[in-house]
Image (cartoon, rainbow over all chains, first blue to last red):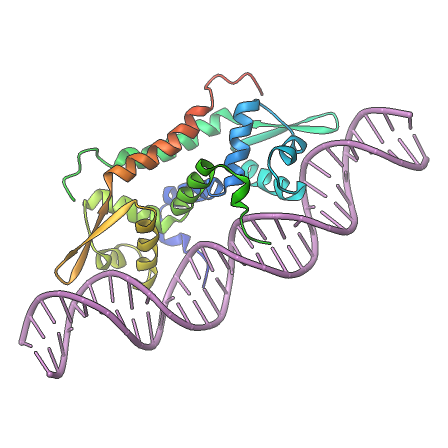
Length: 109
Length: 109
DNA sequence: CATATTCATCGTAATATTGCGATAATATAA
DNA sequence: TTATATTATCGCAATATTACGATGAATATG
């Protein structure tokens, strides 16, 4: 036990859950917000900005990269991470679809 | 170690992460979608609908209830769970704020 | 070449999540 | 009251996440 039974759910439900999991940590939210503000940055900047160890930040960056929300380009000795606009819109849509599925005027409680 | 360092982040970042965590499981997405579709339901329905044990569903319902997304009213021997419209809009806004923070036309990569 | 800088990865400890059987709690029905 | 139905909670096992020191890989600088 202890493992999520993905086979019970639809492709879309699993996808949304997987994406939501990436947002489910304040450090990753902070990284995204910083990337939006700075419009690019490197790992080192983030170690200064947040108070986490370099290894920890690198790990969070990998998760953001794996889900496709950010991408990095090598810039000499350091690395430029930035938000992937296409994926960003895609993910925004995923959430919006769920939220908009609930009618504003509910006939229930 | 192993514990999230919430003190490093803003109130809002922690709140969004906490809410996202609730969305970070396909069963809870499925429950929400079912509640939207059915416009009310009980735990028993969900055991039929999803393939999880009653105890497991009850646990997921509690998490949804704790974050305020759903609320339940006693209906005889069973229970009516439904989506809390106010909280739903609130949470939608939290995500929208983050998503809208990223300008469509990025000057970066 | 040797050294420094920057980021990724590995290994590990601490903690959190997931799933479920068993059981408790509550309310209805006979 | 006794039995039935419905949901919550407890306790446990399996797995996942979080954090970080240590180390590795790659590139620049002297």
